[in-house]
Length: 204
Image (cartoon, rainbow, N blue to C red):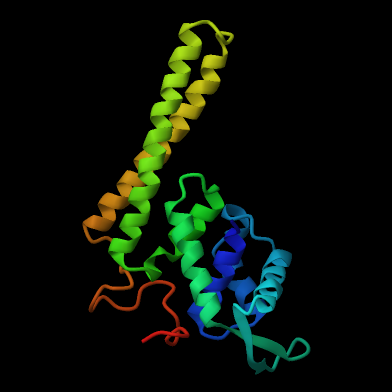
């Protein structure tokens, strides 16, 4: 799954209308090139692919002092569906790459609180199962002498990483259950981060 695709859709959605340079500038300001491996060229490529898939559409042009007019894009109904699908996948998939999970965290406030908690509980259940399996493999392989002694360090690294992922996800769930952050369905708390500048297509 593409973190870039999710981030680009989320930024266009949040702005209501945005041109490619605006999307690029926003993501650069978040440091997304470092934590999500988002390259400037990949942003424009993602926009072109989203246009082809009818997930964003042209919504006019904007004058530019630096060159030709810039095409403004807005999210479509199909784009809104894809945004929510990718967001759910990023938050629930225990095998999601760190950059994709990070993109999901960035825009999780666009969803209702219970929805995000449900996604994270799904992620946690798979992480915990993987923790248990890994610990069993480590114990069996090393106790039976099927691996060189120093390979214990490799198993230990995997176990520590897996436990850290579980602990972090468990902590996220607890913070959300305690009311942390302004989510899409919170009343009176102001607009959540990533909320569209205007109602997204298909909204009631």
